[in-house]
Image 1 (cartoon, protein in one colour):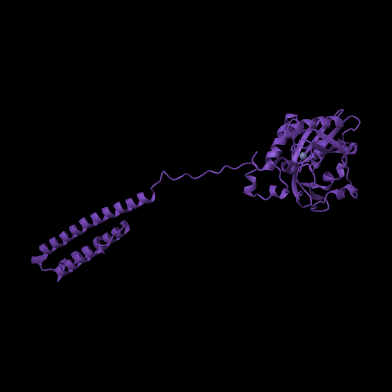
Image 2 (spheres, rainbow, N blue to C red):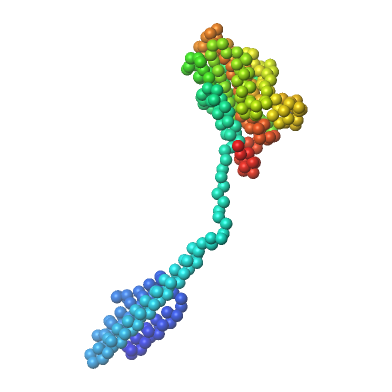
Length: 342
Ligand SMILES: [Zn+2]
């Protein structure tokens, strides 16, 4: 009876070891047969007391043989399982050195940033220092102090985003001039780059764009100083042959005011699509600082004078890279941006 139980366990084990077992399954098999308390082989020992004393020694020996046999086979099964698992891992982790490597894509600076950096570099070389103002301004700094009081017709020239009666998103970096002139005494030579906002939206205008403002205040500054400096600037930016041309214009905070054109750097002045056949391209607005603006900031306009200029950075980027729609500079389309490396 008990012998047959022994044989039954043996043949059951034999059957179980026929399938391909992984380490975990071998561990469970070992537990099922050899666990001290619940194991099938260990269970046979418990039946010893029912065996007649004369047969007990032989029965005990049979159980031990079965146990050794199971232990041996489990050891083998475990070894095979580990070998298979290792082989599988080798195959999974195999590296094919003939495969091409992953390409590392290098980024590049945005064309607006490239132009901004280039401008700062050129003006820094002329002794300008950078002052960055705030994007939210008061009505006073954006308009009133710049000689554009409420009801001034020039306010209609710019569609403003008002945040409240007093606060607005600055429409021009010129507001930075006032902050600097209030705090410092001349000589002043600053560059104020930053975002400006206007309710304006078409192929060449965006509600947000970047401007760079320049301001120089000192004794004896004239329009000639402005032109001399601008000549140097455009030659460094667009090439040594580039010339400037001043045309009369109007800004409330400069008197006289001028629009500045540069000779077309695409055709050299003979006329092309870029300059619309005129040979000239409008590049910035500038002028001699209005005496009233100086006085508003507590600077004596008899002793000091100055000039100011404002350049649209996107406009320069569009000209430099031959872009005809300002939206391309804001849409983050990689197909476009990849072509516009410095
Ligand atoms: Zn041209």
